[in-house]
Image (cartoon, rainbow, N blue to C red; front, side, top):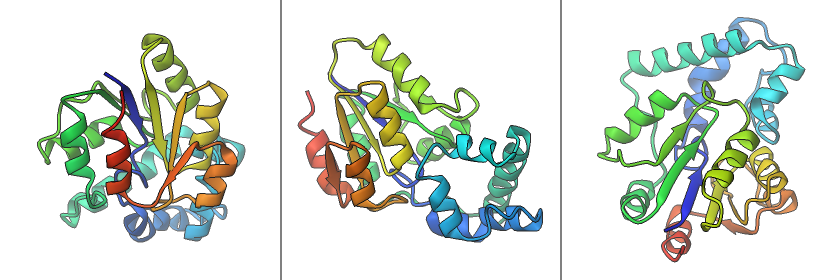
Length: 208
């Protein structure tokens, strides 16, 4: 049995178009200059998103308020965050066989509800931003809890990949179909790069 940890946004959920339409405007309405375009958001996601925000004096309370507005806008418009093609099938195959975690900068309860709507509930754990804003901290703790077990981390974020490298995750996979750029992910330390979910699923299906 392996331990498989996934990032959420840009790795399992295709949130890019939704964030452009509903998340970014919340910053614009407040006149926050650091997030005016999608390229600004993508740049923040090249590192730890919350560390980037802290460096630009954006408080946790403000980010929580903006995230709540984003979720409310989705609910008001009856929009469900789309999952990348193949994600449901991949998780359906992995959950009975492995310890599957989600380690995300998103809200854990929201992620839990999103997957429950697909009948996916048997996660070993879902760690959101309220539980820990540092994926490095979360991965270090999980590595300690599951010492000696095969351990995988999958993300589209350069910051995430760098944090996984810093704590010694043995299998680090980057995905190029989300927010990240493939060359950046490899440079940051990803051991393998996947261009779509089916190829990722095939590799994780071989995890031991």
